[in-house]
Length: 46
Ligand SMILES: Cc1cc2nc3c(=O)[nH]c(=O)nc-3n(C[C@H](O)[C@H](O)[C@H](O)COP(=O)(O)OP(=O)(O)OC[C@H]3O[C@@H](n4cnc5c(N)ncnc54)[C@H](O)[C@@H]3O)c2cc1C
Image 1 (cartoon, protein in one colour):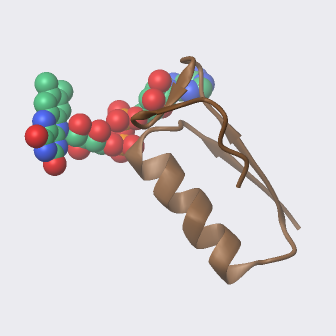
Image 2: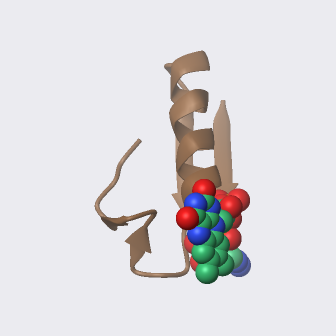
């Protein structure tokens, strides 16, 4: 399964974490147009 999430702010990061919990084997791609995710530098691989 491949899950693509657009937007890496609070909603997107939360969605990615929940998707990982529910689907441990899924390929999850989180796309953010800014150089940061949420409050963190863009180096988050879910
Ligand atoms: C000035 C201000 C102060 C706030 N203060 C508080 C507070 O103190 N406490 C609180 O609980 N809430 C606060 N909020 C509300 C809080 O910021 C929002 O509820 C929360 O950020 C919503 O998160 P979200 O992930 O749904 O959307 P957003 O934070 O809007 O995230 C959307 C993300 O999608 C990205 N994006 C958009 N289009 C694309 C695209 N085409 N491709 C890739 N990425 C894209 C954007 O860059 C962004 O990172 C505040 C809001 C504002 C504006």
